[in-house]
Image (tube, rainbow, N blue to C red):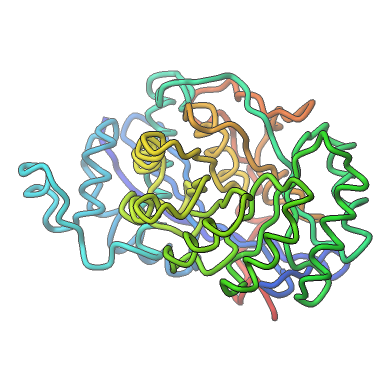
Length: 390
């Protein structure tokens, strides 16, 4: 079996004004994604997805990365990852046994590589008639889930989160530190207090600051939230400053989570070396695909740190994240987005996800186990412009 083509298709899903929500990132006005197709001469096609600006991902995949894979055996997944990451020095890197990466190895290039890697694993699963999580080394057939959302202001935060629990049976939820309120410590405390009042003590509550705080503010908020038994404080400060994350972690008893914005095992090694996190959250469509996140999770396990996939995005990203969560032994929970309008998550496939009683269950089909609907590219035709308006 040989690769005959690698294609990329940008998608968008504009959010109607009545469903738009605001956080510290601004007002979300649309959701974007890029589909990656890896075609073969055996008639099999692998499906993947990449984060990053869709037009740039398409150019990278079709003009640079994809052509380098044409004629290759797609079952050599590790070889192909190395070829994409090391570029013109792929053969010396494999021969000598250490990385010699291309210059543009971070950012959107790594996101495009991630999307291709997901497609290669999907293709391998279809070829061998096995689901990806079993090829990765299955740890479980279902995983605990948490409802991820929580933008409502003030006293409305509790009822919003309680709605997630009531609808899906979650026993864990995540809320944004900044919702419809402006950033203020009292606003944050009031919203978390509302969550605890409506959820009781048996539901885990996590908070996410999207890296929007400075160290003193993050520490003050963390200390104010400690009485509410917060399960983790996600990205309290900029994810680029691992030393600052470590400073916040040392100042609070609340566990620190981070990692959705990182690229490759080397970034996560830095987080671990700085003792900056209790939970790593690599995104399969950004950090290097299945191939690289296996390495990240193994490294984290050696440090006693959990690895929980960041799963916010399209249906393909969520599907890939399910397989990761089922395969990684140090993953104990999976994010399930709860935005009010995400058709590209819930309506991308012919099949439905098996999410019930607060758990996500394994898909039954080979590869990723899901089939794109025929009208996907037409229904979610790409719309230029940013996803957020501040």
